Image (cartoon, rainbow, N blue to C red):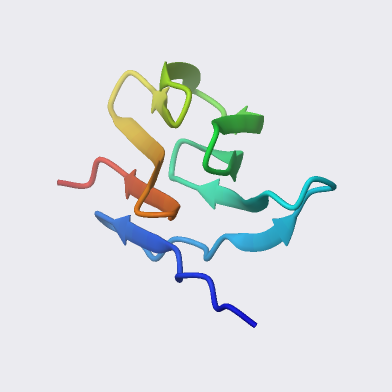
Length: 105
């Protein structure tokens, strides 16, 4: 049995969830995770071919924006009048990568 590398998760302010690993019908390794921020949350899916937003919900007073930067990189911002929080997710080194910035400085 070959062990897959552990996902790398970097956060600026709060601990981020560890993505859950699963294989699709074609044997492609996927990861999913619901990522909370102070401005809202997003459910993400990563694999070697794509990173996508499955679901998203902004907190009251925040507006969400999704930017698909490439097939394997996506950024989500939650903006209010006072602050912006940001999730950036990408695939690199055969594993999911995640950065969460709650805009706390």
